[in-house]
Amino acid sequence: MEVKVLFFGVLAEVCGTSFKHYRDVKSLGDLKLRIFDDFPEIVHYNFRISVNSEITDNDLVLKSGDEVALMPPFAGG
Amino acid sequence: MEIKYLTDGPVSGDILLNLIKTASGKTDSGGHMIFLGQVRADEITGKKVRAIEYSAYAELIDLEAEKIKNIILSEFSDVKSVDIVHSTGVVNAGEISLLVFVSAGHRHQAILACSKTVELIKENLPVWKKEIFEDNSHLWK
Image 1 (cartoon, each protein chain N blue to C red):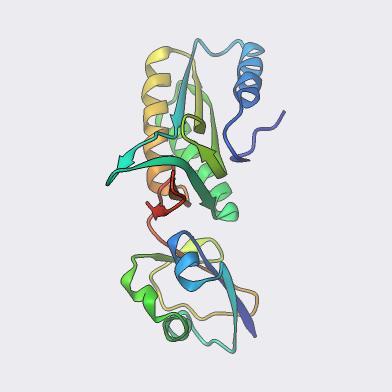
Image 2: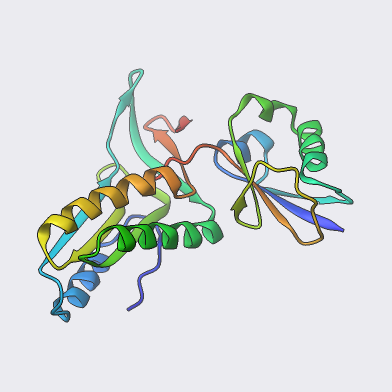
């Protein structure tokens, strides 16, 4: 299985990419640990997480094709 | 013409003109409230903002903008329509980056609903901005 992770705003700059694919991820918690491993500097930033466009705080089970987004505080207008 | 929530670059006068033309064909509204957000040439620690580069989560924008419209329409019974257009990409200082167009039966609810729509956009629309200074350095907001 494979999920796609999107990085927005300052996080895209910090991670040097706007997306990355992860394979064999069991849960959102598992995915977060792997993202922190790859991009340790993001722990210094505030962000919310959405799974398939739904913002969540829960440790969801992920399935193939899920889209996970890391979103810093919104700054529209 | 169908209005999309995102536009590449500054919000053009044509978008506003189209909304006015659409409004002109309706007879149930007595007042329209328009809000235009503009990029300011702020000076931050001695450096002047030349432009803002906006980025957005397009799929989520559609969902969140629909939610905002539904909140406004359910909260303000006199409001007939809510249109929202936000820029993505580079918008220079002095250019328009946000348009909100609210139509209502009477002016009072048009004014209140427009104000609330702008606040909801600020809180809930997944948009990020990078201020670009005249020396091309930048600051995420």
